[in-house]
Length: 226
Image (cartoon, rainbow, N blue to C red):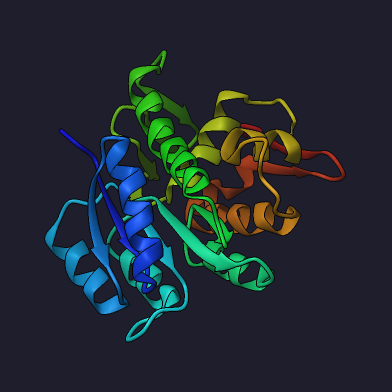
């Protein structure tokens, strides 16, 4: 079955060009030119990934992202102006997984989407074991579900990827550069505040298991069991 991409972009020319690239890659594409239409499509269809512009009529990208995150951890790629670094950080704080700056190449956007979706699939098909368990933290690699003290915790795609990478390398210091390369790839051009934002969001969701992730000053992070 084809995976479904929701492209939310008020500039019809950009939207149509991006749609053509995704369809040529074999995806099923839904389109929205404003935030209200986007949310209606999200409620009606099973969406595998959302490409979400920030500046849109009726509802902006921030509001759409926040409302989607109230119900789903579907991967979200934000489209933002190159100069608006604060926009990027706000998007990550609201739960976005990646961003592409405008003007952008549709090939770059497609590559980012492929990376997010393929990393989800590789966790399912390539896992050597079904579960990762540490203290009160349980991760089911087949269902991509996370529990803390037996209670389900909803992580975004990026938060989940960071957690898995650290747990798979337990007691090993992972540098920021290693995290960036693993999660976003070599072409990433953001700054350290991106990692800080995702790590803060992840720890806030892990509750009493948050301190399993240690910050190693001037080095990176380490997952360390109690």
